[in-house]
Length: 205
Image (cartoon, rainbow, N blue to C red; front, top):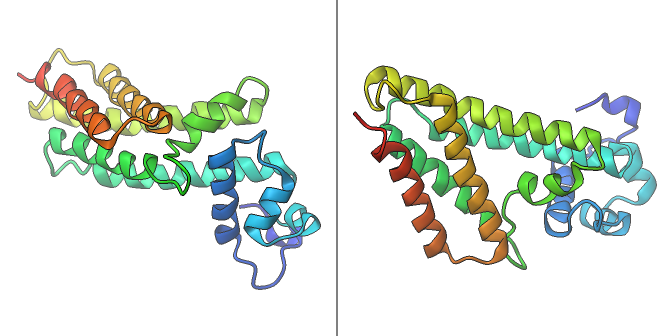
């Protein structure tokens, strides 16, 4: 968060609560279709207060993306607890992802980054930077677990931790898109199980 005094946020203002409300608007509508009226209504802030609290619409969206990225990294780190088998780790990653992707008042939302930032990344350089950094961070966290698995013998010595991490992420991205497209939980869970088998089964010693 930037300097709250500089932005003139009102006393007692709950920035994270308002940010979460704005995030939900962007998640459902996308950046371009989310109007200032939508955002004002969701956050209970009029336009001047909204600008004073977060800056312009793009700044608000970027802040929502960053908060989502940070939350996602925390969930990912917990799921990849190295005291558990890699197979269990990946199952937990995908189960946690589906709990998020299938949530939504109107329909399944998928992933905020994949569903919205990938659309805006072409025209918005700052969005592209957050998206790329986020994907790399997720890959990096999974890669660390893959390296531990390779060193402990859970994976074959010939396994490439980075490639496997990217593959694990690719499964997650597919789940996000398919959830937003309306695939059933059963279908998505079957894809997740296949992803675990592909990564752990085919590369095990």
